[in-house]
Image (spheres, rainbow, N blue to C red):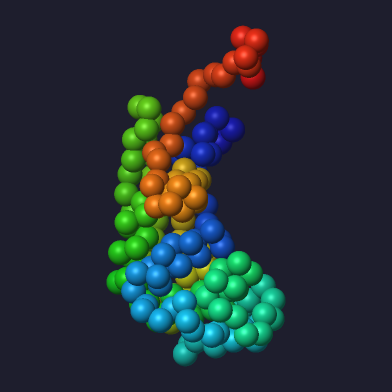
Amino acid sequence: GIYVNRVLRGLYEPGSTFKLVVAAAALENIDDIQSREFVCEGKYKAADGDIICNGTHGKLSFDEALAKSCNSVFSQIAIELGPERLTAQAERMGFNQNFKTDGFSYSGGQFHVEEANQSQLGWSGIGQYNDMANPFTMMTIAGGIAGGGNAVSPRLIKASKSPLGLPA
């Protein structure tokens, strides 16, 4: 295990970073998402279980919910989107695929909610349940958002030098 490149080969629960995938799906599929008001009471009560939030945020807009990383709101949105739309968005953003960069292959991650019940889908919407992501995938997603929608494929750098030619 000590010689495994965790950036290239690792799959980890993405946690709240997965809310970016849910936010993108919501913006594409829920017409009034940016004008809605949500209420966070510290948990979201799904039909078959509760999704616990990291705080009690009270009234929130969609943008505020993303800024505060509100589990209650994003689990609710994930349930509303449903497994098909969430899976489609996750796959557009690199999940359930394999990639190659500079001769190295890596998995984009795993997203499987086909048989999830409501609370499991809610947990998945906040990067839990059985979601697994590769660090390259989440880096590419964040970079694509920062780049105005243009995701750049990660590249490996063997070495770098300072302006004086010294190893940096």
